Length: 416
Ligand code: NAD
Image (cartoon, rainbow, N blue to C red; front, side, top):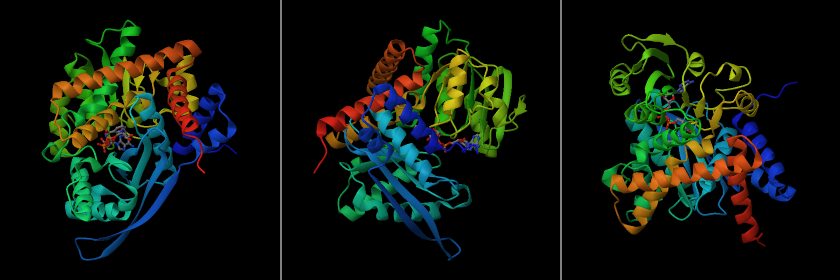
């Protein structure tokens, strides 16, 4: 029987590949394959109609050998503990690859935010925060936004945490609005990193960024900002999509105008003078740069052979399976893996945390300059390992991330 690939089977397979390459001790590999702590909570919410509903949520804290736990919170109807565990593991490697002093964590609540009012979402968020209270905090575990959570969600978390503590604790969460200690550039940071990595890979491929064609799957925070930043850098955006479907225009799209259309209609679909395509077709679009920025398991062994892009820069976490990685590599496609490509988000979250702890506020220019330096360094670090090991960028990034975390665990030693 063929085992179904899930985010967790993919994450564990990736760890195994890195552990073998690094010749990690078996016990250490076992430690890294299991999160340090997984907390499951039942979140009771009074709905607008007066009824009570119970939502299931969790927070998984993977490893904190390099610093406090850090990771996003996802609201989605298909959230599972396994998925959140995989995402927490990727966070651990990601923080190590981009070299910031954090360990990996992730949270999830099984709910459908599209069917909930703002008041219901606020009550859900506050109750969830209260249930996690003893396990999160500025030196313990610092949440951030992920799928279907945003700056407002983070503001509710900060307020709930601060109300229980009895004083304002802006450093307990990142991705906040600017008015309460958010960082300049945080909302675009993940996408900025995704595009900077694509730019660095394009340089190596001698591909001009100006006029390069780009397709983006997912038009949420990461997807829309990536389309906007790539467009501003001179790329031609030929296709974008969201959960309702996709649009294609060989002439090129203006992402700002597409975003207005989405704000008005709820989707990118039916944007003027475009051809409708499916979310499957957008991945197979003829383009130079493909940015998957929606969910996991999008590029698999069934469609990897049909990918026509020269560069894939992973905005989403886990969009490509290990079998697909192999196929893309054999086909000469450069894949910049999630734990490198989308690490700009957590790097800027780290900048936000530092600003909050020191009660400073940096300018957008400062943040973007620091972020660009970090991203280019991380890209070059991974590229160096990839050249030395003659491996694809995913294996190289995993070796770098897993290797740094394993080194930290070995240095700390095992207590008791
Ligand atoms: P978001 O909620 O803002 O947007 C998600 C987008 O994906 C929406 O446009 C939605 O319509 C689309 N989508 C949902 N299901 C889809 C499907 N089946 N096919 C195609 N599109 C679909 O979320 P986001 O913050 O942009 O996160 C997107 C991805 O990026 C996730 O994998 C997330 O883990 C990852 N990521 C986000 C950040 C961040 O800073 N927000 C950082 C690192 C990684």
